[in-house]
Length: 365
Image (cartoon, rainbow, N blue to C red; front, top):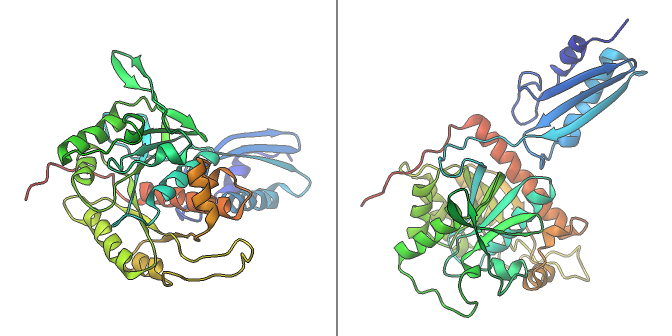
């Protein structure tokens, strides 16, 4: 008896997306079913190329269809992706998701996390942009080995636009490209906010699955300007384990949870969780305490996205302009790849379960 497309769809209706808790057919994730004799072809469209459950979904599909068509039939599954979005912004129409990376205080590695998250997402196959909105302390030129470089401006349509740099598959722009490296930026809040808006809206980003925005530490004018300028998909909160960092991170997260702002927290990243000597990688020394990130994530009712070690390689790579996420074969590269998968997973869940973020109106006292 000939195999039919209806048989394939019936089989795949038994396969659920583990996160969305619905079957792949209902979620419209099955495409291009084709049957050629004893060979069945179909495509599974995931919600992100960084899906951490890609292999499980593929195997579940294989098992389900095999039970219907028999073991002697060859099954060819094409795993692809289409990143979901709830973008309502009229100015960044080609950007699907905007993720702010924030911290309550400086020195917790927020820029390192933003950099390597962007690189890891790009390595997964996503189109990624990175905005260095840490106006007073831009670090992206160093972290990408682009010190002293200057972007050029080109006419796009009827407007002059900054052309972002493209490094490690990430499009990036920073105020550090527009001022001399040794120049201190001494600007009042409104001027810094205007600079942030220029980096975001006057750059020719093109289509992006994810725009990562590295925010300044704390809460202030730039943060308020951001949520007024465009609706965010969500926020990643970076902290270290000790109480003083957690206290500030908690305040940073609470800003986005206020009713006036109401931006989803995608999760918490605990950086510098422990120190492992290079010659004894199995050893873990909890220099700043233990379990702080999990405690904060539990309080905020969000996932702990990663516990990243304190290793010399992170500092060396950043100083050399070689993000460790660019080397996925190392332990550190794998850690950042896992972080990217978890962030992408939370973005997909957020887009499926939470209404679009509203652009914040002007806040007054």
